[in-house]
Amino acid sequence: MRLTTKGRYAVTAMLDLALHCDEGPVSLADISTRQGISLSYLEQLFARLRHFKLVKSVRGPGGGYRLMGDTSAISIAQVVDAVSESLDATRCEGKGNCHEGEVCLTHHLWEDLSAQIHRFLSGITLADLVARNDIQSVRKRQDLRVVSAHNNDTHIALSEIL
Amino acid sequence: MRLTTKGRYAVTAMLDLALHCDEGPVSLADISTRQGISLSYLEQLFARLRHFKLVKSVRGPGGGYRLMGDTSAISIAQVVDAVSESLDATRCEGKGNCHEGEVCLTHHLWEDLSAQIHRFLSGITLADLVARNDIQSVRKRQDLRVVSAHNNDTHIALSEIL
DNA sequence: TGAATACTTGAGTAAAATACTCGGAATTGG
DNA sequence: CCAATTCCGAGTATTTTACTCAAGTATTCA
Image (tube, rainbow over all chains, first blue to last red; front, side, top):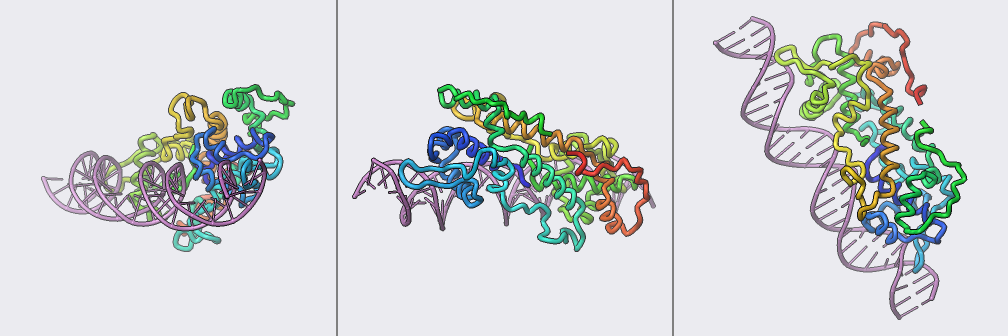
């Protein structure tokens, strides 16, 4: 599992989508201006998100993207995996002949570590992020209107997960 | 916190160092041949590891690198941080004016996430890795000699940590 | 002392990933 | 039809990764 800014862009975009999903399809142009991400880059990211069945597209005027399922059904891990893809974790395909026929020292270690982080990010959904307070406040400022306060405290603080 | 193959290289090298630290200083040339990492690349990585006081160098013939402290005092997080360095986590330095003076949507989220993963990797030390069974078996095969079996079961399985 | 060893530093480079641009096609609501 | 929007492919600049080469410095052994 690779963890770079690319994944962050994808999560940002998906979170924006989650925050506006009740207003019909969200166009990439909107996300682009709201989040300051290039439109064409978003197109690339969403091509992958679509391919991984995390979003569905609505073409034509008034179209855009919708989340495929509920916000509570999409985890951060899924989003990151969708755009990061090729995990060349160990430079050896299949069985570990990384170095002269031998398994490289950290082969299993890194697999374990990746699995742990993956599991961690799998436990956090878009719904969890939407529920966070500071996100809510950011949303207020970004939309310039008050959020419908349905904080029914399914709220999960990140610091409580690990 | 960025997680790429670069960090994996660094951890691999440090683990090799930890496995051979009782045989005097370890030269980068040795690590290079054992782990199949380019010598010059190792030089770059160890320049940083030295700068971060994780290793110390011994010059002259028979010289090489030593761990600065005990294997149980060096965490994976420290190693990854040392070589990854510049965490441009949010494209905004200092205060979050990522996008038109506003904090970008996932600014705090990503900081939190990074902190969690960082904390996770901080809990794993080189000593923990050395204690792992499969690592031991790899070591046996690589050294072609039996390891002094001082498995005094301070052994911590990665899967037990999270 | 002197030569070998090995770290140290810096410049440079090829390949990959990242982030983005551009042009155009397909689709669809009004 | 027309405009909005997704789709698609080619192309590009920047950064990171991974590595090479070359020169210099410190240390130790003989």
